[in-house]
Length: 66
Image 1 (cartoon, rainbow, N blue to C red):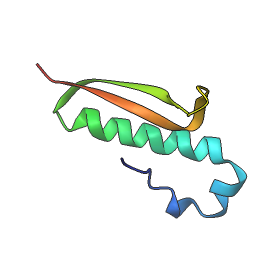
Image 2 (cartoon, rainbow, N blue to C red):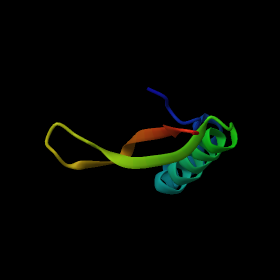
Image 3 (cartoon, rainbow, N blue to C red):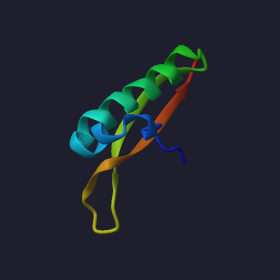
C-alpha cells in the first residue's frame, strides 16, 4: 500500500482535501507512467466493507509495458 505525499500541503489539505488528493494522485500516476515500466494505469475507488466506493482510497491496477 502506498500513501500519497500530502504532508507538504499543511492547511490546504484541511480546507480542500479533494483538490489535494486529486493533485497528488495525478502526480503519482504521472510518476508511474513516465518511469517506462507501465503501459497503462487504471484507478478505481476502493470498495469498503459495506460495498460502497471510497472517496479517498483507490485501487491502482498496472499493465506492464509490452
